[in-house]
Length: 74
Image (cartoon, rainbow, N blue to C red):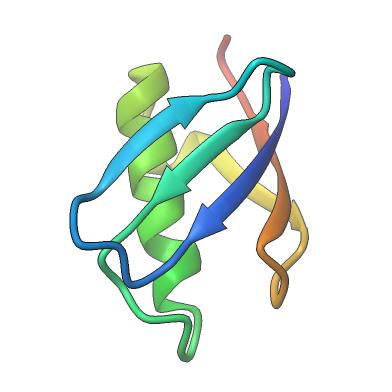
């Protein structure tokens, strides 16, 4: 399963929200430095879909707010 995500690093309250178009907005506490926000987004998405972190792969958007993830096992 492929998921389009917009990440919001340095958020005060970590959460995941879905907008009207079906895109997930992932708010994480981590700063966008050295992949910390990407790792936090992977953890948040894994918790949201109730899968292991290793089942979530970042396909594109490593340095962008707009990211695309692949989730295995759904």
